Length: 463
Image (cartoon, rainbow, N blue to C red; front, side, top):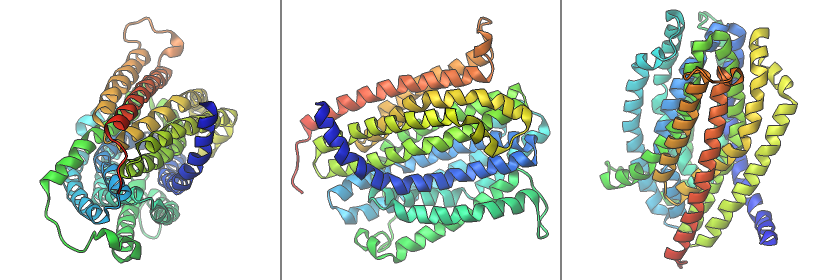
């Protein structure tokens, strides 16, 4: 069995890397936005960095939850692509577009009325106003972000992530000068501090959307999908199919992100310095997370295409190969992060007090790399099988109850018997790491049971 698995890895890993490579570059380009925002705002002021941490925690929670619903397009269109039913993909894209419109309205209303969410942090009014302005600006770019997410899901499903990557890299090239202009001011524009990052992001989001849209409209590769050959009114049956799969995915994303980002809102109670240190480490952890995330998206695409082609056993093999390869790679990354923690921290150039607080937190990044990589790969594999409700339940129980709830109990010493080393920001990170371990174990078990059941009840088909 071991020799068989090594043989499978030799075949599957190059295929995963080929697809995940452009995805990783694109994801890193996007996440570099956060790195630039954090680094450039940190140089402006610790207060603006704290406001950035608050507003980013809220925005990402909302954005990821909404785009998770749209992510259902990838496994649905991926299975159609594997079955060579190309014309049906165009209709799915159009219906996903209608769904994105509805979700954009919901997200915009929340971003413009975030007072209750901002109140969780219990910070001073000036800090809260900066965070509120940041969210109001980002609301202007949400329609473009949601439209772009539809186009990204479509490209992933047909194994064409490279196009998206090119567009994202162009946006990244524009991010630094736009950030500098709006954060620090210039050419007649007054400095805005942290909220200036949001203005730059909105401009680039619309650039991304229109550029990608034109590529799809005029590109020869996209003709067989008939995406823009006709207009389609909302088809509630197809939209319901997207929602039935996508809503649990969106909730899973929301749970996963809020279990981590809402840490920022609670940690804000420990003071601006603590929150700024946490923000730097959290930002670096997010950058590292792009590696397993990209491999997971690639895995979902290949598994979905194999299922659509009637190759159920092949789908399971790809899944296990990805679990082994991704977890091994992330262990190596975690060790490198610990060895070079001070060099990495220096890249953000924080104030000495922030640096002193942030350095010990790097240990937690190293610890959860293994379990985080396993849980995200397993979750995406299950989505390829169109299974999303059970992972959502797993996330709610582990990440919210154990992670966020446990972190609150430890961090704030609710019962009065928490050891000092487990209190404060350490308590939140320890509980979060434990919750990811529980999620990883449960999701792997569900994947194994699903693969066995699916192979028995879905015999190979001839397409």
